[in-house]
Image (cartoon, rainbow, N blue to C red):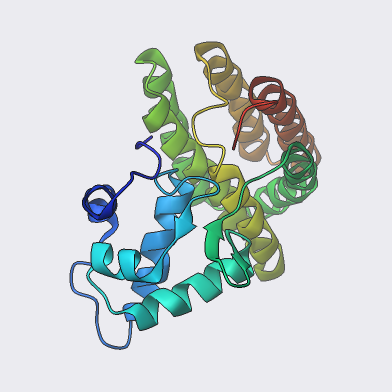
Length: 238
């Protein structure tokens, strides 16, 4: 993960450089600015409790204050930003209760998604699940937390895509945002190996066309992830 929010305009500009829109179109400036700030928050570059100043962000991202203001409004709707009257916008933080609830909701939703994905039974999705599993296996062997985390995010997003249910996908999108904020801090070499086994159980059930087993495997995975994450992160800021 990148270092959390740096102090000073120069430090902020440097930290946000990878997220800076390359050529923000006139009509897409708000969307690109929203995406840039959102990704910086989810990657931990803009850390919890960090103040988000419109002028500083506009200068760092090379856009006017208008798209920054609109982007902050959208981020507030997503729960990533909170506004304090007279003080400005600030990156939110997740409490222990928030983290616990996210994983409980995830267990129910991803269980359903795995069942739907199995019933859809599309070979291209199964092939993609296996490709991601191979990437995560390689990352585990190299103890590469960043690569593992990226592939893991893709794996869980694919569950939503493979389920092919618009309403379920919208619900899971909210969960995905919260899970990404945990980053690599909940990972350890031991947990990486456990995740591989838990994902393999989901993949095997999908491959064998057993929706009930796929759902149970996804639920068990989310339950184990919740226990592991809370045990590692309790008492630590997130």
